[in-house]
Length: 187
Image (cartoon, rainbow, N blue to C red; front, side):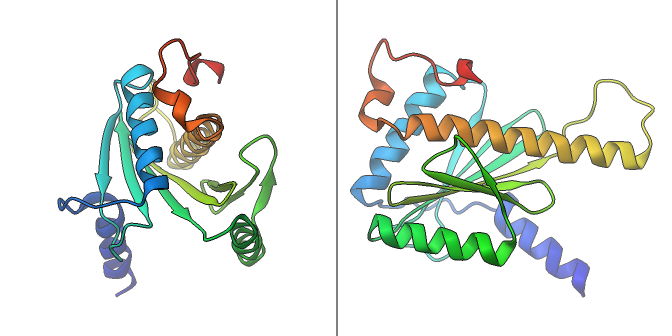
């Protein structure tokens, strides 16, 4: 029974995206446009797929980015105010026993087995979560070594995406401006 539940959740979160178009609020529309500029300018090898959240609505943006056996889920949820976003993130951090991260967003926390990251930039809450099926270049590893490789790969991809998003969100209108320094090259 537990295996079926895990499989169903995995399918819902990472395999079966909804194909319907989604109307976004203006803040999330600006984020989505900036992400597209980022993909075109710096992350063109990544496949970007926007999906409608299970709850629907225009106040949640969910995207999957994939490349070489990695699938990154990005979720963006604006709170009504910055104070509310701070409060929600603090409650989340306490409930998950998350580890505070420095220099990412206004505040950020890593939590869980592969150190998924939840960060806040102003009133916007962002979640970064990776599943990696990337295989090491060299074979001959034990199962425990493969799991450690997979976990470290997920941790590094989470942190890289969180840092890139943190920089992108500093000035969304500049994301598509010609001459803007590359964000990806900084990390």
